[in-house]
Image 1 (tube, rainbow, N blue to C red):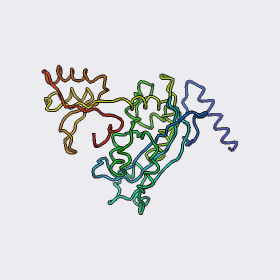
Image 2: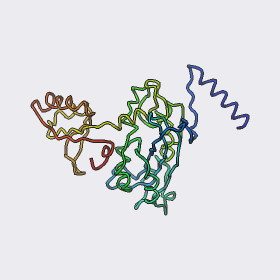
Image 3: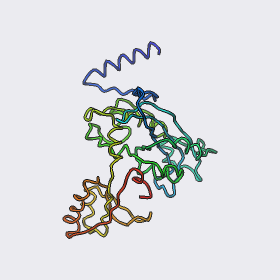
Image 4: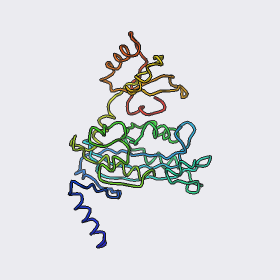
Length: 298
């Protein structure tokens, strides 16, 4: 480290001690976190895909990034085992807006293919796959690499109540800034390293790392409730309640639906009875676990 670097580091440390300043440091990916001290660990994967669009049925993956890590039963990350990054050439050109967002050009992906055998080998030992928008990433991952259909999944964007823990929102950049870092966003493996740092961060409100909170939520069952044939003029009421619209184009019901924790199912049915249908109802519902939650199969 040069004298100039030492001077900058000293200034950053001094500013960080003042209540009038916040200091963000460039994230430098690390491999070591909490020593395992011989304790049994499990393996997880952080996954991110960059794609040509938002539709997992027709748009294509142009980059896959993964970081494989070990963690203790209490959710503390012990270290990085490996990283994976690969481009994939789509059948058509990359839309200009995607290039503007990701920096990935047609020239960068030309001639590249993501090797399914390598992906399968990399992911085989993982007991959980985590993405920062699992509802998006899982659908693409399952379509390209069947091994991800057999894995439990967690979503770091929705399965931690970040605002409850003092963060400004759930976007990856906000969360990383909240831990004191910034990074080069929207490149797959870089986003995975950023997410690893976020999940390793100990939440003062919980006294445990964010990964611990996520794992606890991922292990729970949720129930998807379908508000089929609900009155059109009550759609805003459903939206405020957290319901989302399925247009039926993917084989699911054409209906509003919501996912609730198992212990809130009775409360949700009572809401539909008293606020939506104004009569006794037995709406369609399905139990979801980490093995099918966020999947196109759900």
